[in-house]
Length: 310
Image 1: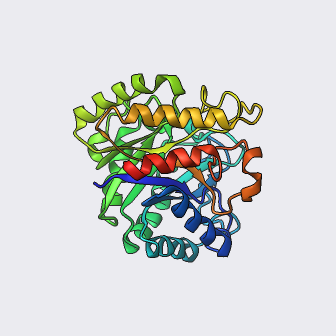
Image 2: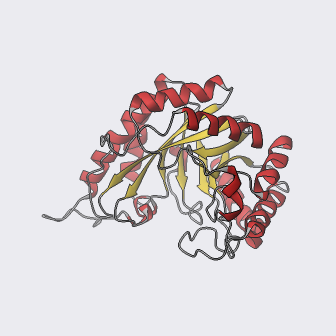
């Protein structure tokens, strides 16, 4: 597997926003300003709440059409970029997807794991076919679904079904601190996680992850990694609710710390940095933006410098 110099692209894009002229400009700008070789194309569907079993991935008012997704993949490829396709599930009520959870044993009149995995598998298989037909280099079967991770049998069954329609590399994007807890890494091709670690703990966390990589003898990359540009964003980059005053320094400090730690190890094969929207904010507003985005912020230059030599 070649080094993934990537960025997550298109998160929460509405239908019509993923491949219009602005989105194409945004993607070209991302490539030119950071030197990426890969985008992780995020396609988000919602379920109503954490205990819902229906996933509204066919909702044409919220999810970009297949035609738009395919056009985005092909446009990125025309620029020389690899595309990793990443379907994601969010909860419409704002609950973090990690809290999707049901009783371990089915109970009459209660929502069930069996129903959720049935619907989730349909969702995944649809986009796995899109990934196969359009030569995506990797397919992400899940993202930060922490309470589902213990359902090993269901995940192994899902992976087997995905492999019947998609022939490329498979990964699961586990959440931070979960790398050594997952019991079915052997079933995927690549180990990946969300690298939202405090800036001063990177060496410690990489040492823990390296043990997992050595155990399973699989490639590893951070399918997500990033920090917001607000005060404290470098200390708790995983908590998007603690919005402080704007701070370009906090975000830059976090990226410098992560890259410095990664340069000391040899098992990290890439990143899907978080993030770059299809409709990115205007360039002149960058230094007032508090989000995880890094367009025209000091962190952008740090990323470009690192990717140039990665």
